Image 1 (tube, rainbow, N blue to C red):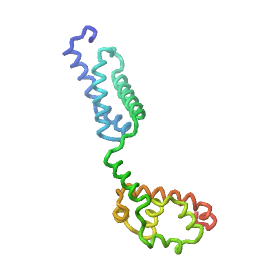
Image 2 (cartoon, rainbow, N blue to C red):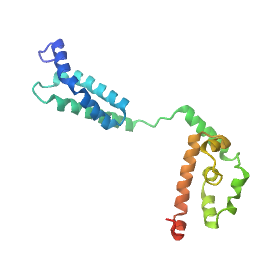
Image 3 (cartoon, rainbow, N blue to C red):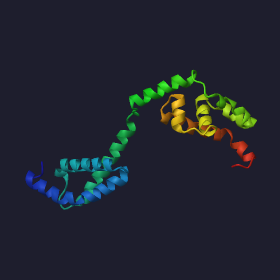
Image 4 (tube, rainbow, N blue to C red):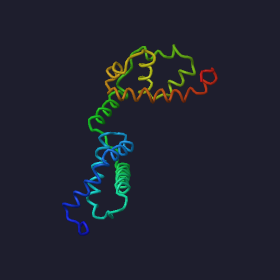
Length: 189
């Protein structure tokens, strides 16, 4: 397996040339992954592959370049494999979102003062608000008109706070799109 070298001497030789590179490998892995735990996993996988294929390394050639190439290829292969994997969602989170969507879709009405936004805004803004899906409109109005916190809105609508934050963000983005010409006309953008 090691081309005439004994296993013990090959292991000692590998350790002598590979272990001094550990900090540099970790540094490169951390730049690639941007996460310390993923970088540690990547370095560990690199060392395992380097040891597994050490018999194919030609003594006298550039070991550092060889092991850094293994690191890069390992990262690229893991990235490609991850891209092919379907998105995974936590079942409990997905279940809570679905329950929230179904419970607030038609059954829950917002507090009365949310319905009175037509008196606060002019026709153009009211029209843009009316274009928003109801779940986005309620969340945006509760946040921006009533100045409620995300926690308060989540409690009122019986939804997870992440869902509320998402609805507000999407609602504001849609409103921005609907009101772009109006804002330009009024000199607001």
